[in-house]
Amino acid sequence: MRILFLMIGLLMGGFSEGYSQEKVKSLPLTPLPLTDLSAFRPTTANWKIVGNAFADRQVEQALEGFPGTGILANLSDPQNRGHLFTRFEHGDIELEADIMMAKNSNSGIYFQGRYELQLQDSWGKRDKPKYGDLGGIYQRTDTVTNLGYEGSAPRINASKAPGLWQHIRVWFKAPKFDSQGRKIANARFVEVYVNGVLVQKDFEVSGPTRSGAFKDEKPLGPLMIQGNHGRVALKAIAYKLDEGKPLAVSNLVVKEYKSPGEVFRNQSLVAVGERKIDSISYHSASQKDIFLLAYQGQFTFPKTGTYLFKLQTGGGGLLIIDKDTVILHDGVHGFEQEAIQTYAAKAGSVPFTLVYNKFIGWRQGLALYVEGPGMTIQPLHATGSVFHEPPVEPILIDTDPKQAILQRTFMDDGETKRTHCLSIGTPEGIHFTVDLQEGRLFQVWSGGFLDATPMWNRRGNQQVGIPLGMVQKFASGPDLRSVGGKAVVPDWDQKNAFRFSEYMLDKSGLPTFQYTCLGVTISDKLSPSAKERSLNRKVILTSKNGFDYRLASGKSIELLPDGSYAIDDKAYYLVLNSANLKPTIHKTGNTQELLFSAPKPGQYAIDYTLIW
Image (tube, rainbow, N blue to C red; front, side, top):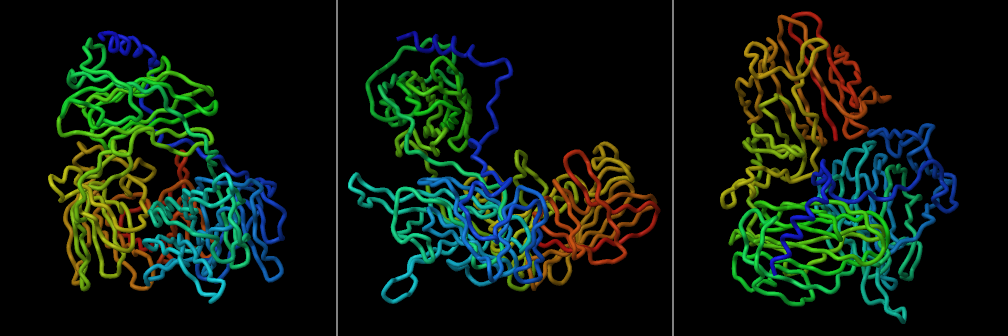
C-alpha cells in the first residue's frame, strides 16, 4: 500500500531536463495540397490554382487570380460553372479553411457532397442572419411542395468584407448506420466557427440539403465546393478524418488516499480503499471533500503516432503512461485550467496511472481528453465528472441608441491581460477598444457591445470584458517612435516615455484622446461609419522633432489596385483619406509595417479608415 507514490517519485525522472507543458491546443490537421488540382476530381475550367487573389470589395463578382500556387480559386463564367469534388471521402471530419468572397458572391461547402455549409458575402447586412448567410446550414427541400424546411441561421453575422481572408472551422459528424444499412443517427454539425465566432452548435440535418450532389445518405462521401453561384477563393484547407477507432481504456482500478496537501509527489501514503471500476470520475471517492484518487489501467492505442492528452482538475493531477510522466499538473488549479501534452505511442496496450489530488474542498472536477491519428478528440472520463459552474444570467452591457458609452475593462491579449483598456460602444453598432497604456487601437468589432459577466458576476476574478461580435485585433506596442528608432521607450525615461493625458467627449459621446511621447503631443479621434462596417481615425501630431508613426503592422501589407492597403495577409483594409499622406512599407523581422515619416518639426494630420 505504500509503494504507489514511491514509484511516482521515481518516474518523475522520466522528464527531460528541459521539460515544460507544451502550449499546443490540438494536433495539426492534414493540409490539402494546392500545388495543382490533383487532390480533386476532374471538373470544368473555372477552378484554378493561383498564387494570389484579389476581390474588389466595390465591384460585384470581381475576383481574379494571379500566377503561383497555394490558393484554390473559382473563376466562374457562364460557360464554366462546375462544382469541385475532393478525391478523398470522409465520414466524421474536422475541417479548416480560409475563404475569400467576391462582392455579393455565393457558394457552399457540401460535406459528403450532401450537407451544405453556406459561403456567402454577408458583409454589411444589418438584418437578422438567415440560413443563407455565411456560416448558415442550408435548408432541405420538400419534394411535394418544393418549399424549404429545416436549415439553421448563424447565431451572428461574423462575415468580413469582400476580398478579405476569412477563417472557418467545422466539426462535422456523419450519419450512422447499423449492420443492415439502416440509418440510426442523423448527420450533425457539432460546431461551426466563422472568424473565431461560434455560429452553429449541435445542429442535426435529417437528410441532404438543397442542391446536394446526392439524394441518398452514406457513411462516406467527398467534400464538394459549389461552383455555379459566384466567385470564391480558398486556401490553407486542412482536415482530420475520424476512422472510428477510439483509444480504449480497460482493467481500470482506483486506489483512494487521504490528500497530502498541495504537493503529492514523493510521498508515502496508505490507501483507504481499492476497487475495480468501469469509468474515470472524481465521484469514485468515498471521502467527501478532500481526497486523492489514483487510477490504474490499460490504454490501447489504435494506431502508432502522436497523441495529445488534455487534463483538467479541480486541484492537482498527474498522468503517467507506461514509464513516462506525460502531464504534471500538481499545485492549485481551477477546473478551467488545461494541462496539455503530446505522447508518441505505438499501436497496442500500455499501462497508465492517472492521479487526481482534491486537496481544497470546494474545487472539483476531473476530465481527461485525447486525440490522435485518425481520431478526433474524445473524453476518457465519465460525463458526470466534468465540473460546470452553476448557470448564471449573462450580464450584458447594451449601447445607448443616442450616444456612445464608455466602459473600463481588462482585455485578454493572447497570453497576457491588458489592464488599462477603455471600450467604446456606439449607436451605429461599431465598437472599439483603446489601450490607454500604449495609446493604440486594440480591437474593433460590430454587433452587440460587451459581456461583463467575468467582471461583475460574484467576485469578478477575471475582470475581462468580452466583445459580443467578430473581433479584429491590431498589433501590440505604441504607434509612435523616433525616426528610425524603436517603438518602446523605457517607462523610467520621464521625458520621452508614453503618457496618457486625458480624453474629451464630443456631443455624441465619442472621446478624443490626448497623449504625449518622445516630446510629441498626440490627439487621437476614432469614429464609426453609419453606412458600412468601418472606423475612421484622425490623429494630429505636434512635434519639435521628427518622428515615425505606425499606421498598421502585420505578416504582410499589400498596396491594392484601388489605392487601399490590405493588412496582415488581407485581414482588414486601410484606406487613406488624404492624398498628401505618403506612408511606406517597411519590413521588420517577420512582419511588415506601414509607416508615416515626419523628418521635420511641425504639425501633421493622419486620417485613415479601417474596414474589416
